[in-house]
Each structure stands twice: as structure tokens, then as C-alpha cells.
Length: 352
Image 1 (cartoon, rainbow, N blue to C red):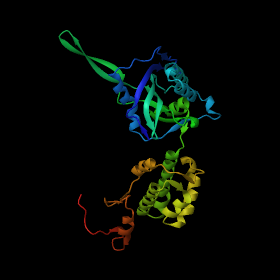
Image 2 (cartoon, rainbow, N blue to C red):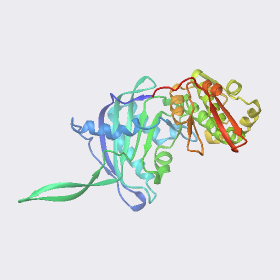
Image 3 (cartoon, rainbow, N blue to C red):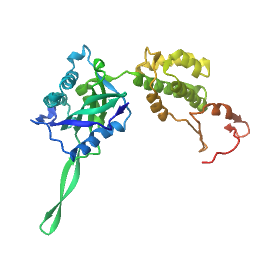
Image 4 (cartoon, helix red, strand yellow):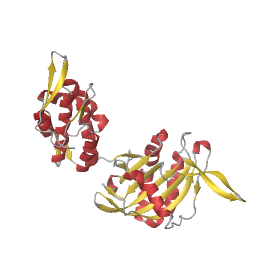
């Protein structure tokens, strides 16, 4: 978990980068930008809002041989070792970004390199480096007095409500390649920012493993439980799975299957399905890991606990008290109407 509420922008370096394949140049500012009290709040909202609104999927710098050969890892280490070097290193970062800007689809734009303090990640106070890029320009109208009339001037500028690309490199977990958050609003060049410029892999901590395994379980429920049984059993299976993750600090696959799988005949199906789908979720050899409670809460929000019927009726199941559905909801078949039905028991209707 991160906390950006008290983040302070210690310095800001502004540069411009063009598209190398179109013979566009880059422009490097000689001095850092002089921050003012008026501009800082606007920049903080512009830079940080996308990170507050998105799911925390962390990355880390990665290299096939060793991190010592990773350009961005070395630039980050240079800055964290000597924060006063941030402006000079920001020029190297911009040149590195320019070298990766060699595809016709990549847009030119402004580069902002910041040194940040007073951040918190996993309850640890840390410094960080922010690298942001603006690409898409927005039309806006400027009014100007000319004699006795007001004239409209069409101009272009940066939309402060939408950051095009950005990353925050936390001075945390250096040995693993630092912990990194990144955003990219423009999907036409996704590989360029993540793979070519940053060169990162997913950070495989307990948060990553919890989310990936739970999403794998969710797909198993949809692809195997639902066809083999019915929608109620799919929902109830996910109820049990989510509650298992919520009440345990450590995940152990055998214990999970014994507690959650209502039909033991589906356990071999689960294991075969994992062999097939494991590479997609990076869980090939995973049978145990620490459970991240925050990740459980995030995944719980994405799971649908509603049975939609073709008679325009919905039955909503309760994730907090799944035993209610087990005890008080029955499914049957009506021979006369040739239709399925759900029988729901209750004592009285609850007031809204």
C-alpha cells in the first residue's frame, strides 16, 4: 500500500523528447525548474491522481544478466545515492527515453523528472523518483481584448486532468530492482514505455501472488464449476474461496482445496486446469505463499455474486454470510412448466 498524501516535490526537471524515427530532436533544460506555491498543487494533482485511482500492481527493474547492466536501475541508484544529482541524471533519462522513441506511433512530448519525499509504501517512509510524460495536447480558448472587442484565440496546451505516461520509482527493495508503479493512458505504444524504456517485470511479492492466484481461481470457477454444476455452485465456490483467503495469513494449496472444494471429484480437474493456465498467471510452481489482505479486498470487489435469470430476475448472494445461501436457497425443476426454479426460505422481509 502507498500513501502519497504528504508527498513533497523537492525538485522538477523539464525536458522535451522527440520521435527519433521522424528525425525529431530532444531538448534538455540547462537548469531545474523553479517551483512556485501556485504551480506545486497543480503538478501534484496532475502527477499523482492516476496512481491514486488505479490498482496497485507493482513492477521492478529486470535484466537478463544482472541489474548492474540495467540503464534505468543505474540512473535511479545514482539519484538515490546523491539526490543533488537528479537534474544531471534527468538528462540521461531523457536521452534514454529518446533512444527508445524509434517507432512512428510514438508521440513527442514533455518529460518531467521529479525527486519526491515523504512517501509511504508498505508502512515504510521512503523517497522516490517520479518520471512523467505529456503527449496529447488539448485545444483551449484564450480571450484577448482588442480595442472595443474581445477576440478568441485558439491555443493548445497540456490537459492537467489526464497524465499520458508516468512512473514512480520507490527507494525500496533495491536488491530486487526497486518497487515501481507505472501508468500509461495511451495503449497504442504500450510496449515502448514498459518494456523498452523502463524494462520492468511484475514485482512478485505477496500482493502479486494473492491477486494472481485468486484470479486464476475465479477463472476456474467460470470455466469448470459453472459448466459442471450451475451458477449457484459457481458463486458459492467463489464465496468459500474468498473467505478462505480472507481468514488465513498463509496460503497452502492442499488445505485450500480440502476446505473450499465442495465436490472432491473436481480436485483433479483443478490440478489439470492449473497445469494448463499456470503460465498465464505466473503460478506454475506456486503451492504456498503469504496472503496479502489488501489484495483479497481488491479482488473481492471484482467478483460477481449475482445469479442472473432469463426471466429478468436477479438473485444476489452474500459473500459475508455464504452459509445463508447454502441453507436457504434450493434449486429444482418443475415438470409442469418445464422450467428450473429457485426456492428461497426466509422468516420476514428486511426493510431497506
